[in-house]
Length: 198
Image (tube, rainbow, N blue to C red):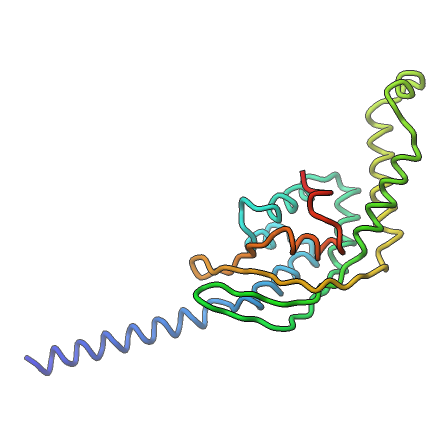
């Protein structure tokens, strides 16, 4: 009887150890998750990229915003996202949280934004101009789209490096990015997230 109880306890311990080992090998590390996030962005697989972000955070909102762009703006963002590269410098994990120090290489978002703003300002379109010239939303939308895509195309090779700490938290085995603003700023080549996320 005692042998059966001891044997049952040993078997239970072995099963638990095997389960923990299998689970830990099945789940990816924080830096692998972040690399997968960047890879999904590079491939413009935005639904997959959302799996690595807080569903209520600014990164998720930004991805949804891109998904709602028209085809012309999506093509420009696809070009931007495919140029982003990451170099992981270090990863520190503790109690289900991780801090990844990385260098992110991306087109210079500040230059892109400045060129876009200058293009829009140079149109010098106010409500009176719209009325006087019988301009409609299609015309204005086309001007906006052209300014947006031209600004990205003109600066796509103007790459900047941003060193950033990416904070991630494990939730049900999956790693999620928790410091959206810093990561967005790095992905946008120094452009603050508040400039682009509604």
